[in-house]
Image: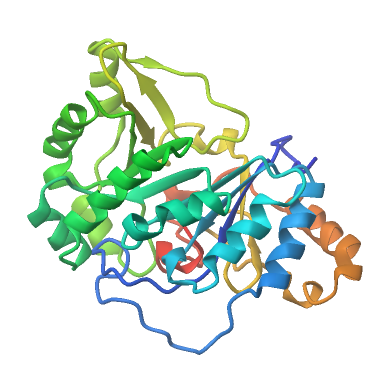
Length: 324
């Protein structure tokens, strides 16, 4: 079992398949994706070795991330590799939903069980302004299709942006009244590329938590391999609300996830470090023991906190760079 020097256990791997994205979200890639230096993403054989190695170390959940993971032409093969790895019990993916309507059935058949879709607003005009795309209807058709296909969980991710946070929150409460969807509101995080955007648009999530509790919502117990969201349910609602608040006290105390970038670097935290290169050990399955040892050794250097409160964004320029 993977554990660090603070006795935190790690069951959950976020695996980035590419840093490329076809959206231009104003809090992440406002000018769109730009490849400054050409690079090769992890191959199928490298992904297979990583999945097998992490499973042997106790990982039972893999989330495919990006950039936008659906831009990988071999995504179905990646899903099959991960879902068929012994020990992996849950395969999830975070997507912008661009291809979800046309691919949901195939992805589910390939072993995908949980899907998160980034939808920062239910207002088509706001959605267009945030993402730089005219794809709201297409993305929402994808959400409907994911529900039709019977995924174990369909969730929506919405970043809390100050000027529209309260309005969006109310609209989403209405929207999940009869839809079995968890909407997860995520506090805007400061990134190296856009410090001024954070200063203008950050809003804390604790006020929304207080509102939920006053209205009779109850916080549910978090599974051992769940993400960082505090999830709330209400008997009168088919859906749920999740709050991800990285600026809250003790947020890092329950950390249970590690990240692999699309270039094969192990990131112990979304912030604060350059990553540990694993690529030299991914070409030969005979190096699996060395790979496991490097991961375990690196984990002992994981820090107690992300230090976001100190304004330390580390080496992370934007969320697409290592998968959020």
